[in-house]
Image (cartoon, rainbow, N blue to C red; front, side):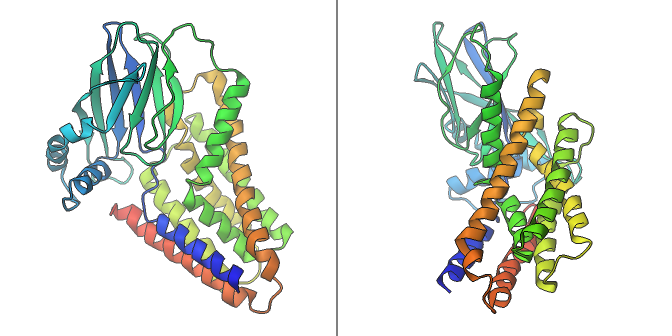
Length: 365
């Protein structure tokens, strides 16, 4: 029973973590170095979430349901504090930033996401050799597009939350990354998008696993899920399909609840389960694409990045299943109480989290 308790506690901790917003794809940064020895950075992020972070830092109550004008005024009030969260260093020497709001959109339309675009700027030493970036008001992976001159093609770098980037060389003639470098970068990104950052996707995979530990039913469901999310990941990357994250994210949460509830209601793979998993896989693929669509990758990089990212996702999913099986299920799956004391309680926790998160994402609280 020790293994069972450990697994249930782990699932409960995952569920608690899921109550925080899934930030991958909600923050993007474009940093440009100019010939007049200045730099500018445009930061696009979710305005209400940003305001709440700054309010919490100032030990003030969190606001909600603000109009566009009210939210603009609230963020304006925190601009000096915002500047302290942006760190640009040239040859490891900081360049103080000034910040303004260049655009803000708040609409009551689930198909159109709210956003704020911040403009930061500062001075750059004339002979600087390297530049590094840090923005510590996001806690998950986000994309930094860096152009080391006004007419340079921006390079995309993935940064982990509030960690400062490595120093990037400032040179127009730096050799471009090889196909191997690109493949490795996006394989790691795909893996991290599931483990440890994609806790909603982890719970969905665990929901698939909990129905049965038999290899064939698991492979049927995982294969359906893989084919589906691969299709929409590719179609979204090429701009053929598009759906707002304000629709996709609640639906992903609802898919988590569905597979968990079905685990409680039935002990065997139903004929419609693979088809349902396939349908939900289409939604998850759009969620995965959110991490890539804003990169403006050069055309020759799209295919290797897409393939590597997808491989990383699959490796992460297999890691989740292998961990659940060899860590817990292998030892207790033949016990008479396996379903009543393990599958049903774990599925109930997952279902409760999925339903709660569905409501949370719809009403943005």
